[in-house]
Length: 360
Image (tube, rainbow, N blue to C red; front, side):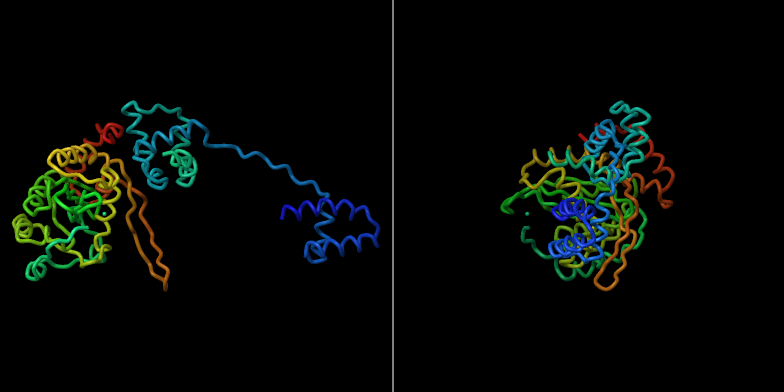
């Protein structure tokens, strides 16, 4: 196309200055070389002399001050994507200014609040550029039958307290020997996530961890959904759930989509914090628990996530719609099923929470 434009400019000047007979010859040569239709070629050669409008330089709305502020907010949010950061900016901006981590000019603050998710990703493109199973004993058929199956479509809109659970193995590249396991719980309604490291994979440790995590949850534990791992489907865990009036369910075998919520948190929370290296021993488990205790408030108060609103299948095409990104804290405040006492406690925690300190 560049060559054709150069040819139009070169031939056009000669074409407009030629006589009628000469124009016919020039036009024949020009259409033979370019392949253009004769009428189209005439229009192009006649218009080649028209003055092209001067291109105006685009006014840059988001200057260096906005870019630097976005980088600071992005780092403080643990480098989340533009769509999630867009929803977090109003909350994170107020919290960071309240604790003295960020002081912005009112004009810069106004532009930050108005920036789109696409612009955030474009501005942060530069900073972004610089920057696995073990065989297990199966539970008996009687135990499996005692725990009802729940699929991904059965959740509907549960109240806070119905959690999916899973174990994340910190085994590195080898499943030989003993290594640390992380018990992860995530609430279906809000996305509230709690983690605890276990020295080994053992059912009594699961019960002890559940007792501690129940005390940390801002709501009562009503449901406990797991996969078909024998560490969850056994008399110890089933008896604990029955005693404390916790409804225990399980997913279908080999259907990870039945536990999509917890599988997402395994990667976004646990693997993001710990990676894939091997961790073993008491010291590693204690260090991992200190990490989870330090990061839990940041994850639940300052990490927005998407939640599926609807899914429509038209032939082979699946169209998904999502709610606006929101943190677990925001979702709990928006739910009518959460008592006002719990909301007051959450607001009190959020009022004194420093996002920079919580992220460390």
